[in-house]
Length: 88
Image (cartoon, rainbow, N blue to C red):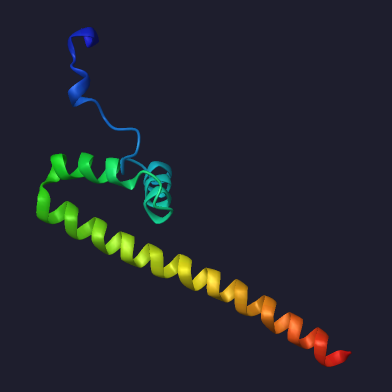
């Protein structure tokens, strides 16, 4: 029976069906690594306005979070180095 199911209607690997898959999907979008494929799957599944709005917000927020994380690590290193130089 399953042999007659078309590949065009299969569930994509990156999905929001459970928490682990959703977390992995959001991580892929945050990392900008192949998120367009995920976007087009959801574009076809739920329609243009909802998918576009969701992914634009997700990409912008994800980039802001990762940029702030990078800045926090960078500023921490500068702060530690300045403390070491002040002690000398």
